[in-house]
Length: 320
Image (tube, rainbow, N blue to C red; front, side):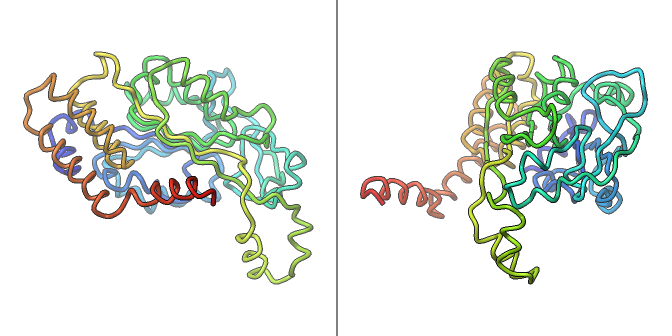
């Protein structure tokens, strides 16, 4: 169904636009169902783990890559200090403070190895230069600057984003970082998006020295680490557009919003979008989309997708 929708004329002239800030590692798994139809703009200043760009470029309709620091402000200079850490996934424009998290197992990943001067570019100016007016899926793992980057899109672009993913901190790790509560506050105040997912992530609360005291064997040490309960240190947040304004209720946005909701398994919201679409457009595709979403809901029912909630009810009832 996703292939059928994204093969339509609406997406030949205006393909889905994906922005990936902190694009190290591999292609975002959630984008795989529709990447071949999409334009992706990917950024990562630490190129030690930026290899996926070359290996995955053929999976996008078009891929732009920038080995730059992405900033949330327009700057008169074209370089800035960038803090390289022991793990490339923890490098940041902001100074890491492993001393603030010294009682967490993953603190060594944030040890500063070098400060380098790297090229910078703002997100807004990059999109302007590519003549991209609307970002459909915004994903950022910038190690501390997620909210300011989203805001740098500008008011018009932020209101039009269909899906936005952030990974802000709960516990302070970087100097001056954007925190999870500030993202919540900003998105609540703007009112254009709703929070579809909030997943706490983290590291066990144990010092590296205490972890080492269990064993010197690297494999066994991992078993010990994975046996400990994680503490909430940062959060994975996924927002979806409310589709509350007339400006958002275009046929293209409703089609693509349904694709994104279906990808995120938000089948209830996907059904809401089909109702909004059927009220405005006579295209039979929306009835097909509704039928597909209903089948997915029934598939969950027949697959006992409700069972975890039943278990929770019994646990609460019997005090387990």
